[in-house]
Image (cartoon, rainbow, N blue to C red):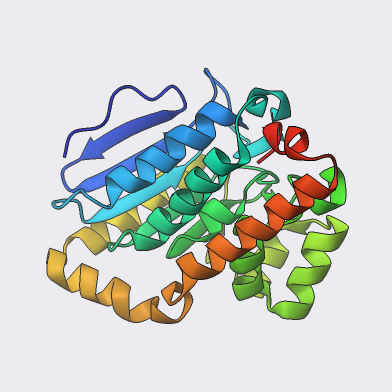
Length: 251
């Protein structure tokens, strides 16, 4: 299945049966805006249909993964459209049936749930994790998947504190908690991701698919249904703050 047009925020690199998606805004780190929201949804859906790819790598640009949100870019977009995209974005990432490696190249404080959903998570030494898209900083219900992903990774007590207070987790603490698997200098991050990808790609494709299904069955079960409900609750929060106009400008 061919790539659906040119994406402004995603650079795609294919080397044999390994595919890398690098998120960016111009020449710099990804800025989360309405276009990125749409393109990343398209990209993850597209990846689920790549029948000859064995490993996917997700990474960012420069020394920041994503720490900026352009709220105004969502002006005029109906909440129903954002709900539709948001549900498909994470459910499609969850449905990629081959190993996904994340190489997190810097602070991930806006939609950090995306890279930490990977099967293998590598982080640069200066990485920090936080949720600056929702409750603690913007009075937005953390219901678009951040609740599900961080609840799985941190456990119920720690994840509620993380999402409700806006606290920060640095790379070494993330390693201790099991959020990331390796912490590396930024200069060696990409090489290590590709090294691991090549090691995995030696396997037969059906074995990789079945292994992915086996090791992720617990988290993947009922994910889409839970995500749909959580997004609905987030929409209710927008409505309570000012009706549908509030829903136009946020994700």
